[in-house]
Amino acid sequence: MSDASGTIQHVSDTARWVALYRAMESERPDALFHDPYARRLAGERGERILASMKQGRTWAWPMIVRTAVMDELILRAIARDRVDTVLNLAAGLDTRPYRLPLAPALRWIEVDFPDVIAYKQQQLAGERAACGLEQIGVDLTDAARRRALFAQIGAAARRVLVVSEGLLIYLTGEQVGALARDLIAQPSFAWWLIDLASPGLLKMMSKTWGRAVAGSAPFQFAPPEGTRFFEPFGWHEA
Image 1: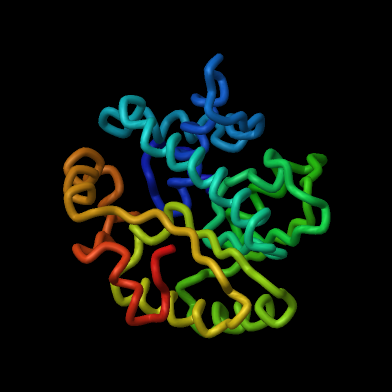
Image 2: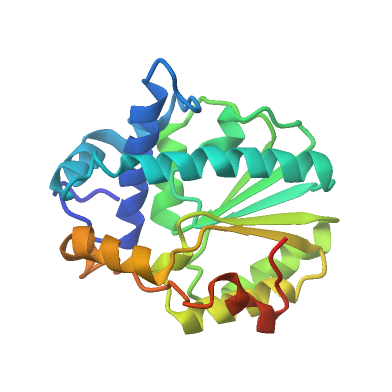
């Protein structure tokens, strides 16, 4: 995450882009949420990336609404469904363990590329999470390491909420299916919170931002059957 350019060089760079959207919202007087760490995490590179995106500021609102809705759904699942562990896949520069009202006993596990984890730890050094926070540097496309990690987490938890905000759209259908199988294999993985693009949205995003992300983080996954895509793998919409 150290490249000085204003373009997306790797899928992990999209985390700075999204962090800047959170910063923009947090600075509004009528903000839907407050993320005091977002601008620090986005940095100048985040500003340059956003400036390079066609209509980047105009299309901030879907990301902002997604953040607010997922905040609410995560808190609801923890309170209602007795979730004791949150597993955030491709966590990026998310700061929910620091900014949400979470119980100290909750176990929150963030997984992302090692360089993303290292950058985040550096930027948030001295900050204290509200809950028990673990950060693990793993390439989630490494199936063997992914399965081993899931097995380790699953064995130590009672009810796990898996979160994959902003991840699936960058994967192929085959990769998403493999991930779904690996997650359902753990009996304690009770819930999987996702955001899902429709084919129409994928087309619009590709038209607007396709050139900016095509070489390093192309938009790919938008199943025409929607959440029914996951049913053969054992997952059902709730």
